[in-house]
Amino acid sequence: MAAQSGPECGGSLLIPMRVRVLSRSAFVCYPLERDAPRGMPSSSINLDRQGGIYITNQHPQAHRCYDSPVVEQLAAGAARLGYPLTSAQLSLFETYRTELRLWNEHTNLTSITEAAEVETRHFLDSLTVLLALDAGEAASPCLRILDVGSGAGFPCVPLKIVLPQARGSLLEATGKKVRFLRHLVTVLGLADMEVLQGRAEDLGRLPPHREAFPLVVSRAVAPLATLVELCLPFCSVGGSFVALKKGDITREIEEASAAIGILGGSNLRIINIPLSLPGNDRCLISIRKVAPTPDHYPRRPGVPAKRPL
Ligand code: SAH
Image (tube, rainbow, N blue to C red; front, side, top):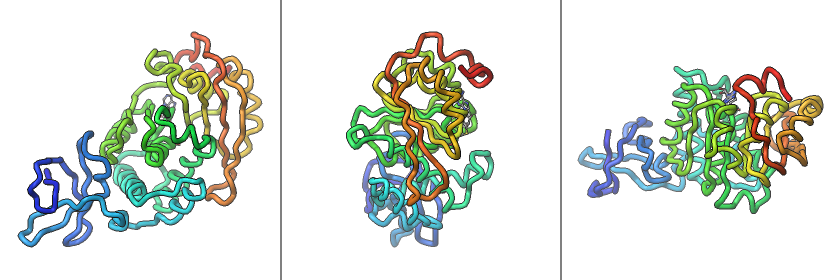
């Protein structure tokens, strides 16, 4: 359907909307167009006395309109990371969770579906990448983040919600996940966010992407020795690659040390996630890109996994 903007329905802005009914007089709408105004997902539609509808502007408490608003852990965790969330950001996370649940009914995106778990194990876990950035890097308008093997958008989409000035790129090989990501970016109204379909081994060789990103991130895609070959070619010299890992990573790091050097990486840091944040035994591995990656890397699709350097 198309809904008009402005309480008096007199505005000229027409935005195609998807509408979810919450009660007899309350709805939540999602803009379907890429260029819809920012913040629209947390707007609400109301009925007027004539039975017409109007869209209220973003309301500070708008996130409370959503179903099962289990946002406390997320809000508290983000504040602990030094990034307290606005109600507009919380509202975007609520919309994200709802879309993930709806799409997961027909598309296998994640095994984590329970609301509180999505908040901690997907959203908050993704935001821990912020621990690897200094305040200047995080706030920089030049920040470009590439997420390699983004799946349902983790960790880059939560990062983009918290760092709206950053440009984001989601790289994913699987078509159905790419379709979800494109839908999600539209519904959340995320500006400067692209979705790239393909294999990291192919895109990492192409000039627009190669050594173009000050920050490359990746979670749950491959062991570190393989992952650095997929990720470091995208990283600009002076930038960094951050992998989200769990458990004992000593062996994984040992096995990756030769590959890191060959591909232009150095200064590996392990950042343990503080126990005050939910999630067990998780850490970040941050690697600085100090030299260009030699031209013949990454190797052909599948080779980095089959024969890690
Ligand atoms: N990062 C997400 C998804 C992890 S599952 C999360 O943490 O939830 C791993 C994802 O990486 C899958 O969706 C898979 O399709 C993608 N992937 C694996 N190898 C890839 C490659 N070489 N290039 C691009 N995407 C890849």
